[in-house]
Image (cartoon, rainbow over all chains, first blue to last red; front, top):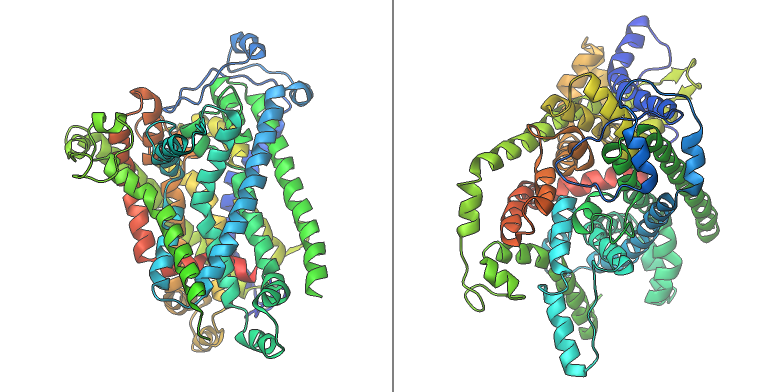
Length: 332
Length: 286
């Protein structure tokens, strides 16, 4: 955010001006108040009730198993009549499945962000060079980003198939050549499935990191490099002392954006593992979705969604604090 | 600076390898859509005519027998994405212009000024959509908006406004202010100056915003899954639904998926520079 921007018209001004400036901004603000702020506050109040609803059928079954505690709740009459309660928030402390979902979400966020940043950075360094075919390469690199995550998930599911996919074929060839029996159970095992989900998300979003970092690299003035070269700095020194520190601000922005986006992950998981095996790959968003739609437990779903919000805010604040301290040290 | 041979080799190796990583899934999807069920289940087959005999059956099935369903869902996606895009571009351009050119001071609202307002608006983009699951379900069933186009469009406008406004604000701030001022001196109203002078100059920014809104809405899954159940189902939900209704028919899913991603991939191929401009607008300076 820039602090000072050119402003055509001063504060207050003629009454005519006060009206026109509201006409510009207020539609968007009112829209957000109605469809974002108001629902959020409503959701907060629901989280303090035991509001139940009948299950809602969706086209894609994200059901999963109804936990034992939920069965009793589902029998209470749906709709009207609910009490104020703090039970939703108490229940969070002992809900194992919630803790697993929270851990999974953090794993996706941290794993995804790290992988995407490192690979994205390397690719940006490559694209920053002058070479024949660079424009074509940039278009190709961009393509995964355009794809519907659901489609990317199907591609991933095919390519990580433990029998029919090329990489399974490679594993078999490798096994028969070396005698080491390897057969990765991609979606059959919680940890491998988590990795596969991170890889699919990364396939899609590494280009995002690359393009942002590339733009950052291109905005570094050439004479800084010239000066460094004249002083006899090696390529590695130039990278460590110039490129990397100057890219830190944009790196932080890119990582923050990606991190916040991965917190929302649901579509890839629904298509690849459905949250399984068990609930080993379930994300918070998915758990909230199931709690609301499949179990009809609106009160608890609202409460968890606020827990997710707190987690997101914590992540962003911590990250920005660390980032600022780290960036400050490096640049000065 | 002339590069050494090994450096050039390394450079091209990386570029080619990553291009393969990017493109192979598309290739695999395409060839799978041409395989008979038998060719799929017999393990990986790589090259048509060489290790399997391609067939157009699945494409024919998709466009003939399933043609009507496909057309309906394609239309749903198109309506939802286009509607949301138009509204988001209009609201975003107006709001972005306001924040770029006027000074706001909300005395009764946390004493917010322009930067606070802009930050609040962009922060809406990063709220987890899960927050809206419960209230939207209640609101939409109360307003009878479940499974309607207008309902889906309303939700999509909500998450497209922040991004649109942010990019447009950035764009307007980079435009010289003199043109508008001379128009105002000539007696144009601020609104006329905005519509007749600023907007035409902002075409590249508007195109970026439109592309982003369209692609985000086209690819959106969570709201579509939650708010539609038959009539208004969009393509991502339709594709995800293939998961359980008839077991995994890879050959059919591949054809369907390719059809669904074709429009956005084409947009990416043709309008790449607008996408990069939009991506970098907010973030590089932000």
